Amino acid sequence: MGEIWRRLARRPTATAQLLVASLILNALGLASALYVIQVLNRYVSYGVTATLATLTAGMVLAIAGEHAFRRLRHHLAEEIHSDADQRLATGLYGLLLTARAAALDARPAGERALLMRGIEQAEGALGPATLTAFADLPFSLLFLAVLALLSPVLAMVAGGFCLAAMLLAWLGRRRLTVAAAGLREAAERVHALIAASAIAADAIRHFRGGSLLMPRWQNAADRERALRRNLAEGQQRGTSAVQAVQALMGVAVIGTGAVLVVDGALDVGALIGANLIAGRALAPLLRLVQLGESLHRAEENLAAARRFAAIELEPAGTKILPDWRGGLTLRGLSFSYPEAPATLFANLSATIEAGGVLVVTGRNGTGKTALVRLLAGLQTPSGGQILVDGVDLRQVSLDWWRRQVSYVPQEPSFIEGSLRENLTAARPDAAPGEPERCLRAAGLGGLIDEHPRGLDRPIGQGGANLAPGLRRRLALARALLVDGPLYLLDEPSEGLDREGAELVYALLVDLVRRGKTLVVVSHDSNILRGAGKVLRFDGREPLLVQGLSTAPGAAAEGRRP
Image 1 (cartoon, rainbow, N blue to C red):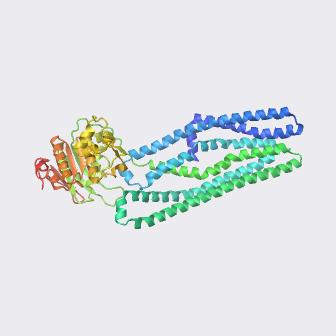
Image 2: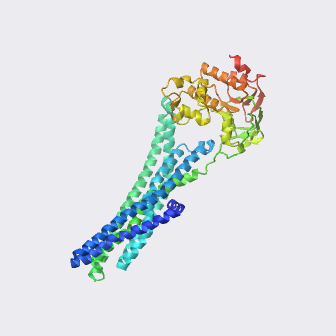
Image 3: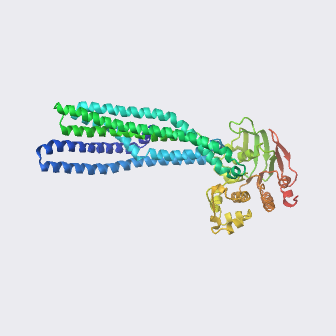
């Protein structure tokens, strides 16, 4: 319930108005009990029609006022609720967009989807109906006080049942606390398996991975189902207990009141009215018991979102270097993945002159792609520095840096949107004809010409519906549009046919001629021959050697095997 109080405290003015509206509503709620008492004691006893008409007219006015204040109160609760939900959803999605990529990769595969679904559940559980139910809680005492004016004995009886309802709420919360943690863990496992089956669909089918995944899915789903069933059974028991408490209070109030009527301490009208008032005193507490499961789940989901909020964000450097031409210095650079037992590489020092070509090669798994991601600002060094004109990259504005770096990752991915949007998102100030020019330069003219929507052709599933060669060419087109002083190319010719490889070679030569700095990860002998420097990753300490050509790019220009 802490989140409810936080929401109410965050908007004190709206909360005060909500409580005032609740006070008036609950005061008007007394009208029905008073109407019953007056009708039975005055009209039934004396039969004066004018008395009945006056009482009925007053009751109708009270109902109309109650309806109006109920709508007003809902509006106030919606104002508090919508503001909090917007902050929650926007904050969490903002974290997903700004968290360091390496930190996201280290999290469980199903966590992100589960977090967003958890926020949706919390939004529903903490909605206006819940806020108004909490606003009614203090006024249980108001009804008990009015009941005490009619009969102190019946007020004590009703108060006992109110305490019983509070005990039920406390016991239900203890039970849910134990069950919720296991349910979340099981749900994360289920979501991770769903994500794995979508990502590796071909491998699962061709290499019969279903025989491995299905038992894991069944175990995870069975565990989640069992935990949900336990929670549902607990909720059903809670609902049954609520109904029992409500019924028992009715019996106790009527039974005790009947004795008081016989003894002459209470009249029949007051007894019936007292029963109605006792019901109104108990109702907010019973509502709290019924909300217990959904409120606890909401708080668990919000707690998970707050834990996620501690994720490492991308560094907030602010420096901009307007005269930077593409030169870099690596000083004692080392890197290891978080919680990994071994360092991928260490003591890497090198200078990459503006306009130079560095080709990175070596065995798989030795840190070549990690180096490129470090240079792109997607990873943080474990030790050492990346210096840009003598300034540590961690002090540089990442927004500025990514406008200086044309990056082609080893496994290109794209945003949900059109071809045009994928390119212009990387460079919003591009001239209208630039995206098409870059696509054609990357050999993707057919991708535009053969689709009725041209540049507005949609790209879904992060580009997974495109052939690997098309994805790589599209990543090249995106890099060409950014056209920064530094190009980071991770295996740019991998997976391309001869025509595609020739296009890459020609683009590299053109980039060198234009004075761009190139860092290229590749095993391609043609690209290696065009290197100014070669960085070999064959051990823990990479070895920097002179390239095979004296003029960067010369070999790639004309001599093919």
